[in-house]
Image (cartoon, rainbow, N blue to C red; front, side, top):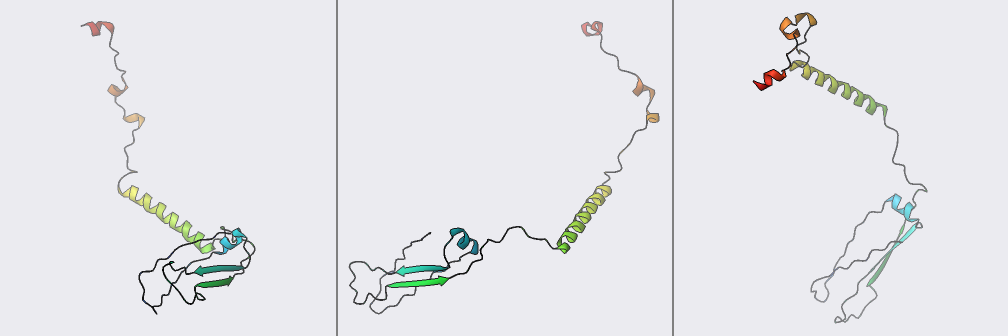
Amino acid sequence: MTCLKFSCYLGRMRRGDQVKIQMRSRLWQNTLIEAKVGSVLSTTAEVVPPSSVTEHNNDDNLVQIKLTANPRTTPKSGGGKVAAWIIIVSVLGGFLLFGLAGFALYRFGFFKRKRYDKDDVTEEEMTPMKAPSAEDNGK
């Protein structure tokens, strides 16, 4: 069982002043199941004045709240079925994105690259380069 204790300090008050302390929290179903607590949860709040304050009626300083919860026996699984329309829209969106990318590449000339044929090569390009000889290096 997990308990949380916190303190709330009030400023100077006069006789007859009233204070409303409000606490909000959320309790998740999976938390109840994992903690293996029963179906009744209990919350206790107590006001403890400093020792210098004398109080004639201490009956309203303690409040206990009981919460009845009926969680399912197993936590809800994370995976579930995906609707068919979501799959169809996703596939169509993927095709549209692929088509737009192809169109953009076409518009910017990506597919209009120069291609060389073997017949277009000149004799100068076919002639091998001379390797420098030892005689050429010395001169």
